[in-house]
Length: 503
Ligand code: MV4
Image 1 (cartoon, helix red, strand yellow):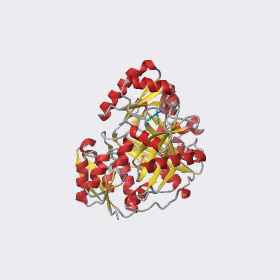
Image 2 (cartoon, rainbow, N blue to C red):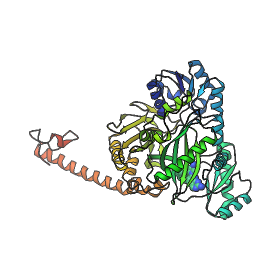
Image 3 (cartoon, rainbow, N blue to C red):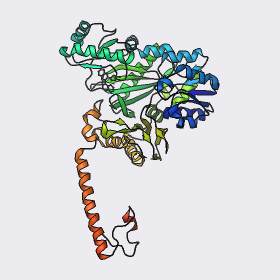
Image 4 (cartoon, protein in one colour):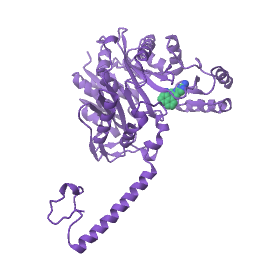
C-alpha cells in the first residue's frame, strides 16, 4: 500500500498529482527551490522540503537531494511528473535502490526508448511501421549519401539522444548534405554529449498523433486511444484534441495494437505514450515513445473517463488493470489549450512577472489545471506555461464553441499570455474544419498574430474618440451641462442623472 508520495516536480503537474493523492487518501510531499517558496504546489502539499537554489540543476534535477527528502519524509513512492527527471533511467534506478517505489516504468524501458536508434530497432522487431531510413547510427557522409540515394530526398537527420526536435536537420538535396550532417552532429554533441545521428525519409506534411497506454505489472496492456497533437510551434505543443479529426476507427484499432505491441516488447509498466507521424495518405510511422505522464493527458482522461494519475498509482502498488480493451471507448470530444506567459507579439518571449488579477473559466465541461494565483510571481527559471484549459463537448464543434467561451471568460493581468492567440486558433477556418497538419501555425501565422493594420485601425479609433471627447468637454464648459459621465459604462447609467443629455 502506498500511503505517502513525494512529487519530484513543481507547478501545475505537481498540484495535479497531489489532487489525486488527496482523493486516494495518500499524503503528498512537495520539494521546492528558492524561487518556489510561495508556489501553490508547496502550499497544497501535506509537507514540503526545500532542496536548493532556483536553477533546476540545483533543485529539481538534483537526484540525491530529492531522494534524501523522500527518505526523510517517510514517503513510500516518488512521482516524477513530466520534464525534469521523469525520463532519467538513472533517477528511476536510484529511487528504487533507495527502497522507494518509482511511479513509472523500469529504467531499462526508459533507456531503451530514450535512445531513438534503439527505440527504432525495437519498433521494427515488434512489427511497428517506422519511417524508411537507417537502423544503426550513421558514421560518415558516404553512409548518408548511400541511404539517401535508396530512400530519396528530402531526408531528415536526427540525433539519437534527441527527441522533441533538438538536433534535427532537414536535407533537401545532396549539396546540403555534408553541412547538415556536421551541424546535426555538433548540435547533438552540445545538447546531449552524444553525436550519434540516424537518417529518415522526410514526411512532408505529417500529423503528430500519439496513443496513450496503461500497462500493469502482470503483463496486461491497454491503449486509451489517440491524441491529435499537430498544432505546435517550434516543437512546443499549443493545442491538442481527442479524438483526432483524421483517424478512422480502423486506423485507431491498428495503431493502438501497434503501440501495445511495442510496449509489450520492453515489458512496459505504468502510463506511456507512443507517438506516430501520419502522412496525407493515412500511412502511420512510429516516431518516439514517451515513458512518462504527458502534459496533454487530461484530454484522454476526459474522453475515456479515467484518472491517469490514479491508474499510475494503482499500477505502482501492484494492482491489476481494472479495464479491458473492449471497455475503452472515447465519449464526446476534448480539447486542451496550453496557456503560456508569453508575449505573442514579441516572438513568444517568456513574460515572467506578478499575476495582478486572475479569473479562471468555470461552468459545464470546463477544467483548468494551473498553479498561479493573484499576487504570485512567475519565476524566470522554469517553463512559462501557466495552465492548461481543457474542455469537453458532445461533438467537436460543441467543444470548440465551449473553448471559445472559456477563453473569453479567462482573464489574467500582470503578465502577457497566449490567450488571445489561442482564441484566434479557435476561430481559424482550417482549425474549425479539422483540416490541419504540423505546419498549421506556420501556414496561418499572419492571421494568428495581430496584424499591424489592426494596430493602425486601433490608433485611428483612439484618435477619433479623443477628438470627440475634447469636443464634448468644450460643449460642457460652454453650455454648463454634463455629457461625459465619470463611469466607464455610460450606457448603464443613461437617463439616471437629471442634467445628462443623450450624445
Ligand atoms: C519527422 C518529420 C518528418 N519526417 N520525421 C519533430 C519532433 C521530433 N519528435 C520529430 N519531428 C519530426 N520528425 C520525419 N521522418 C517531421 C517532424 C516534425 C514534427 C513532428 C511532430 C510535430 C511537429 C513537428 C514539426 C516539425 C517537424
